[in-house]
Image (cartoon, rainbow over the protein chains, first blue to last red):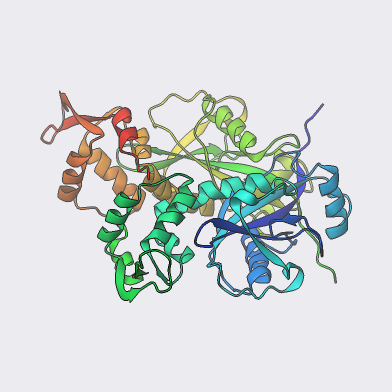
Length: 235
Length: 235
């Protein structure tokens, strides 16, 4: 029998990462109104849209921010990714019946957790969930999140400045250290890390210490973007 | 009027880069048998395939190599990417009529140009074309190639070893220099480059010089993969 070509609907799914000072978190939305179940924010794409436009639309509806940095990282197209009964039923109600096949293009964005989100439309209720507390999500959303963590590592290696977009404007070294441990999912020696940070020409010690902390107050630092741009690798 | 969701066919397109000692080349195939017109090797994906499987299939049919390294780099989904009359006609004949919409997922691979290809099936006749000599290709294949050049830069920054997979087993520094100039599309100072190369712990000077060259014979070098793996950045 002659093989059939795929004829499919297409969606985008957005993984938005934040850092709460201790752990990497991901921004999820409710599967349905008042539902306990969560999912990645996403949408089927319209006939007149490119995938990148659809991702921008979802991110805008989710955060109220226009033109968030979005990094397209992978197309998920496994033949059975939307074949579970519960997922088919959800598609029936949320979109339309007979969505027999659905591929998705996944995007990665980052945002400071403290930033106020002005969600519009269906993404009114957003939830930050620490990566290691995420339970079963619909479709292959768990796999997409796993892959997004590989992508954030690549992104940080290409553009170390990404790390500082996850941190508060003023930060202490132990926060940067914790964030790197989270991103690389491993213990990193704090003394060596401190030394490395001190040598970075694009972070600057401020004239300000932590206050009201239980441990010895640490100095605050800030990221100097103009210095950073000077030091970018340019062959 | 309610907006329609996209319902589309999906293809993969493979950009395979090689280096001829002077210039980056890309591996193209004939649009039709005996045709002068060229295109990227690709295929619609079958109903039972994931996109990654389809790319592996195309690369195998193109080169005879199983499990070539393939880097998925972007989904191209512009609503008008397959709307030119000539492209619609070609789809009619090559695949089936009424392919009204087509998105593609693009892959990047690299290969040594000297390597013998054992193409099977429809990709019998392959052509290496220097990047800067590529003329008008069907669909958005020119745009895909432009984006593949951005991707090779990211890949090289993440994994410098990629450069050595494009070079012969034994190479001279001026070849590496030329290849970097091609990848970054800019002039790179040769003296500084020589110095940097000498310092790399994972390339080793061989006990062998070029022969029969018009200029002063240069020493050959080789890439030491085990040394390289030791020096990979591991936080």
